[in-house]
Length: 526
Image (cartoon, helix red, strand yellow):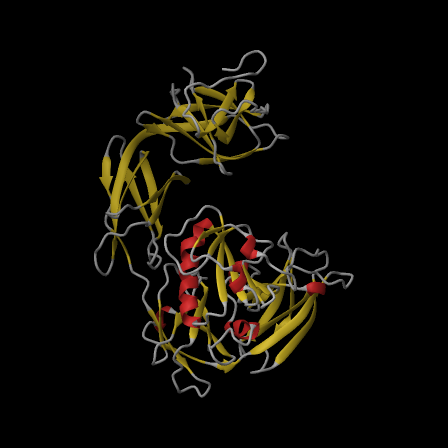
């Protein structure tokens, strides 16, 4: 407890550790501070008076006050701090909360209010008294299984609603089982998804559980997402094209797949997009040929895609005054679709004076160029659809109030100066005067990206091209042929192609097109 000068001391904490501290006072809102080093002596906690919130917890019939119930207020914003108030002998409670969005619920021994309610608190508006109905609890459990093999499914996501409010969010364990304690009465359980499985055809089930009872739900079943077969054909539409490289755009995956000697590629995904279409791009590693494809559930027996000579697009992003905007994200999207980073067919940053180009445009697939600013304001160009081998200029793409951002186009990226944390040591002298591809990612994606880069390096088979990964966070790979460094990306791009002088020639997101790697240097491709 703090003294009359607000000073406090917390003894018996583990030396060298980091702790979280919560400070509470009847006249102030609770304040939480995380990542505090034990031994710190100059810590300041500033308390906010907050907004006064009060209410009552009553029995289900609304007549009997519920004494000693815990009223939980959980912030919906990170770090999702929880404030707890306790009801008195009249079922009343009071608390002060900082402005924000909360979920709240009453809980006690063998009692719950049916679901989490939402509460928005602003400093300018008084909060009306809250009324919570508390009921006895029951237990519901069940198992989710594979509809083909009968095996249990781990990681399936389920949501339970009681009285129209979210009561529980569950994930199945290794045995496919789930279990939840909820308020008595009628509820609805919804099986939402599981990695590697199709969405359920009938996802929701209503059930009624009595107070103090335990209920087993009927078995729930999911069908696995099938393996899709894609045959890649040459320009003549008949000859298989072995060695063609496939990149998945929706769902977006980092890495390549390669067609076998018959031009066949097997495609597996963990999750399907909402429209259940898989969209990807095929590129030939030797010539400027490519194609877009879309796979549906009925394509599991084998779809065909024909390679065409790639076209290109160029243009310039400008503001209302005609001034070029550097460092903005520009990409391609199908006409009529919402402008969303996850839906872009290709993307890169604009260069000096707002200029951009992309040399891997598939003919016969109409699209628009879109420019997106850091505040997510956006604009579109006219529809472009170049003929095979044609270069199309979309002119100025006007983002009226756009502002330039950071770009390294034509400038050096000093990735070798970063601390190396894994992979073979980089010999600075031997690595000079060689082109490079440097990829940045967060620690959460590090393993997937590192695996994808290893496959990519094997496919390219080009020792002259340096490939490096820079991780923003803590990650120490065990063994990898890819040099790994620690650092933060210099701008909004994640992948940088550097010429032999170390200057950036392309700033993009994800993997660059093969044609860009060929143009990077005369020796970047065999």
